[in-house]
Length: 246
Image (cartoon, rainbow, N blue to C red; front, side, top):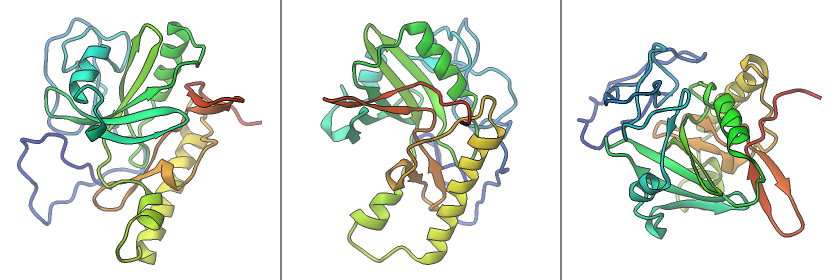
């Protein structure tokens, strides 16, 4: 489960290059570090590195441990949320691929209106999700609050979803060793949420479309900490962290 390249301009690693990662949350940030001026506390872009603060590639002051973005900055990163950058959509809203000024690829999830959350509540719940770091969980990079808009910015995982590889693509069937590796990785990520997080987080929506794969077919579980709420007209995601067992 190595980290893929974060910057377009970085040279590719040699074929035999392997990045070793621990099964517990790492304390080292992935290279290269983001070094820009900011007056706020720092941020890091993946679940690694010494807990030394890094800072927003946009130079924003950060309210806590994750980057805050303006809506305009994310619009630029996603080419105005263009259809060409659309990664997926559903009851929760839309996910677009974006590229930050330093070349970092991200996935920007714009939640549908109607969560009914205030700014402080949203920030508090994002803060809980932002503390989760594990090689088999998708890392939260930052967030945006703009009037009634709520957006979450995640690391970009490049090799689509498990659902796509099992049901959606035309080509060779995924072999059983790969399936086993993905199942084990997903289980490790969920076990971390259930056992090692404080507060504990219950996923409640685990399915093949919420398991993302990197280029080595290592699993990364997505959408943890988002509780799906169903109404008569719509299904949307609220970032209400499900932190206790029944």
